[in-house]
Length: 621
Image (tube, rainbow, N blue to C red; front, side, top):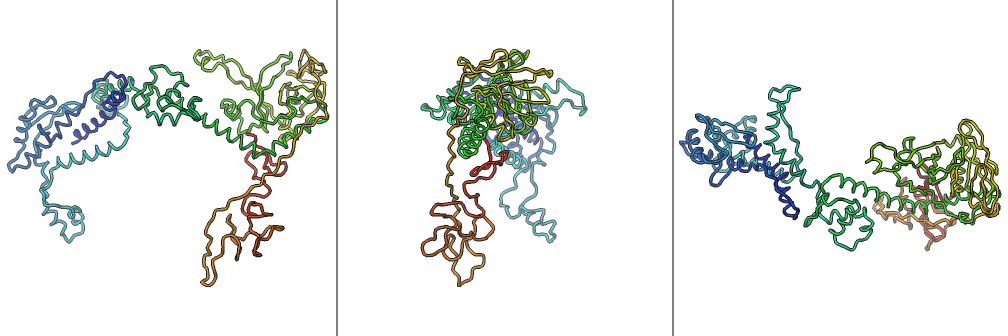
């Protein structure tokens, strides 16, 4: 029985991994060279077949049906029926051999007929079920399902049981773990090469590996593939005029795959390597995150418009009357992220290595060293620290790694904001600023968005901003270096030569940008329309109305207390008390349990709490 079960399970394995795989390639029109493999269906038919020639189990049942059936007659029937069968041969006395996929097995027919018969007839079962002993009665639970037919044989029951197992497995998507027995001694550190090779061969693992190597690891219908990965290509997103097959080709064009990396079937796309699918999944996740970031930035800009207004006021007030202004950036709106930091995962990992820090300002800057040489840098600013990061060539010895990633980010300095005593800017219309760190050394940076950077430092870190046309910079080693700023019509936004910076005249120091205070947006709360019924209403009292008229409505946001009328609200017609949802004819939030009044939102995590009305702090990203 166990050998028969193994044959059926091996047959399912072959059908799912070898036969069905190769048949699908032919059905889809994929060029394919068939790989030969051993199909053990011939062994299964030898055991279970019901037609000519009938199988071993069916032949045993026929012998059991005759009154004078015996083991010798069964062996004779086997010899007559299967002597020419490729997987059957006669053995010694009272023996026969079946060549299973795992090897030849010799069976002794002694006792086959008696063991196959079920001698527990129905009348005996009914007699046992009529016993007065409950234990004996419970031994015959099938008494209610008996029929008048002759009891089935053990072989018949085994075939039906295995058929049910096969049907159950066929409905699933099985995953196989093939186990190799290293030796027959059950000893550790002992590997029998011959035994292991024999198992690899009869399990069909070699053929399965050949099919997998020559085949394709991933396949999907064109429509499903297109709708999942269309966001990865600008050609297919957001709209595409062609069919799904053409859209799939446009998506794969993004990966620059070779002609052998994929194949187009009649209804499916076939991809050879799983790494290709991994790349598509990663690209899809980044694209979805990118669009989500854009939506979030747009909404955040609207929801935090007062926060940005206060930021602009803070930065401009810090240098008002002290520094000339540049006309092109005088009333420039703040964006905060100028390097797409939200989608730069390498920079994020660099910052996350120091803990959870929220980056409020990210921009490209120019750093000047002790010899006034310009160096391209990236500056990130959080409440905790200011990061100065360089973009350098990848000096990895691996050529493939350098080709994939020619440039890398290198953290040059991380300065805690608590160590920055002050920020010095000149009175000219330039972009230079000096970060003074008394315990270490200073940084001289040039940033086109310096006013926005000062706004964040003043608002979030209470930074001290000084204005001076002479900067005394402390360099590494404790040495001092003096940088002076002069007005020169040809200086532009600031030209540094040696220790002198020439700057063209700018707008007056008393210039103030037009920053109108953002208007307060009227908000309203939509309450769920529920049926509010008293727990124990009296028969005489009518049920209260949910909104006004009669008894006051309970607060739908909890507490059970009625909402109090707002002072100064207009009376409703008929002398009824004013509704808690109206004030001066305009809808407003509920007075208790709902959002705060006056358009004030709850502070968001990571946002500073100071400021004016209508905001809960600042969260530019």
